[in-house]
Length: 322
Image (cartoon, rainbow, N blue to C red; front, side, top):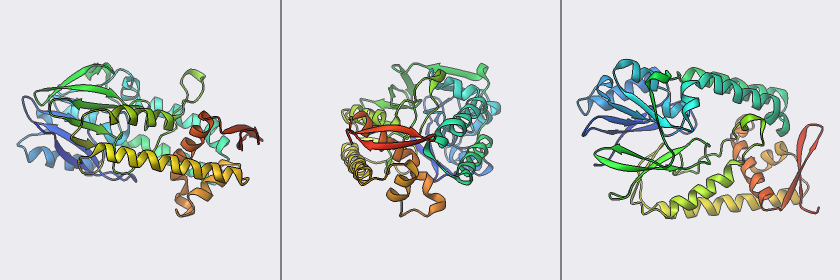
């Protein structure tokens, strides 16, 4: 059985989010879309096309705890008896999204954006956007939640699917692979356009874990899977996952080398690198490239090709030995 795609509107740059439905042997939904009247109406319409209502859902399985993928989970659970399933790793985000999001905002305000060196008005714009995101999702009561391990299996559509832990876009992402039918529900791991490696808050006061190197590791593991059809978190299902992975990997390394060339020419600060590498994006939207830029810098540091120093609270980069 193939998953049925239900497209749910969002206001984010990634565009509409996909939920996937299995109707047999019980109604199961993968991801739920953002919490909004428009997304809820689209979900109800998509279910109605298969003679289902929200209250008929038996399970809701969440790929990762971003608002456009689990924002309506609490509302679905309140409509009926659906069990909400999420990985053990992502569980804290689903049961206390607002609390976890407040911690992320605090990290961005107190450490990350200061290190980038954004002017106050740009930092305030980013923080205001993050604060507004909190209204796009409700936490799920822990009593309604079930968890699955990162190395387990889930039954959907009468088949067993392998859970594939795929960090990179976020540390908390899981995908699902069905080896007999060669189907892969990829969440935001495989998209037609490379997903952004989101900078996460360090856990328990530790060091920030670089996201783009983890994304490339996940690409390598998924490239080895025998996949025919990919069902992404945004956009149309597609085939040819290895060609897509090779293209995205090559582009990441090409842009990483461009970043290094700018540093070699004396462009040291993240904001200056951002303005140079994303000059094609209007200045008021340029910060959208920030996560990917930080990813290129993380890769170059991991390769030992650049060093990082802090000058007046702002990160500066130099070529190794330069």
